[in-house]
Image 1 (cartoon, rainbow, N blue to C red):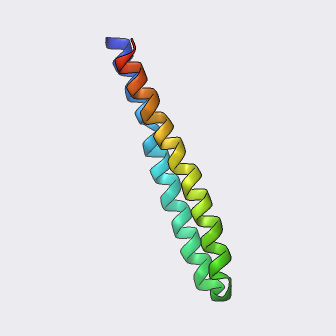
Image 2: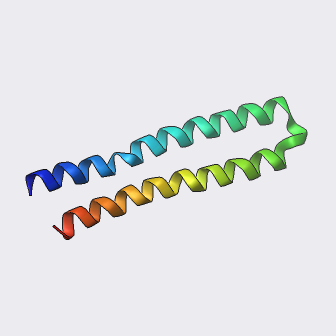
Length: 72
């Protein structure tokens, strides 16, 4: 169980990277909106697509961690 727990812990760390990436992306989107308020709709569309893809990476890491723990 020891190495499986380490592997699961490393898989869950994808959430940390995803959270940092989402924070940076949101900050840059707010910055872009401040600079070009007329492009708000396009910025939001691109931001939401990027955040959805980033969140899916975190969910995949969580699923892999659960698989490691329960299917060993």
